[in-house]
Length: 157
Image (cartoon, rainbow, N blue to C red; front, side, top):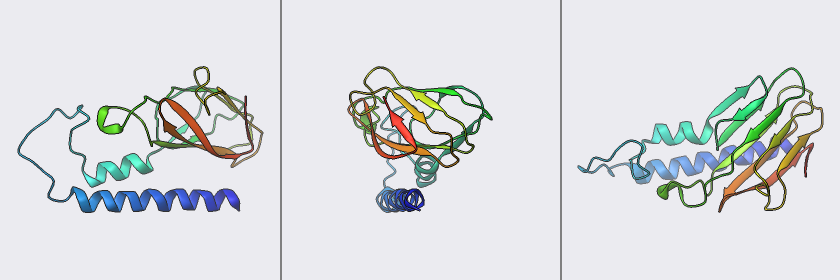
């Protein structure tokens, strides 16, 4: 129940952020064109929504490609995953500060997610799941570190 409550809170928080962004983004189009890869590139409300609520399922061991959104693990056996460290700095400057990622097990296997040294809470780098459906964690990026804010059936070492 606590995990469902936390997921609801996270979803509601992201929806409010999306709505606030949508209100301020209207009429913000300028005549200056910038490259779409630039951090200064305008983002449409739809792109902001997709980014905030993006979800991907991983069915084999390997690298987690995203730095925000929802990641569902369903490898059918225990799998070792890797997650890159976030880039320090504001998103407007190309950084990842404030990005949030939630990683959830869809099946009952002991997953591991490994980051570079000391990139989880500043002193850890491996998250290990107990074998239960729905176990997971939510982390927020800040200054090049992932900070775990919710752990359900996941231990950090």
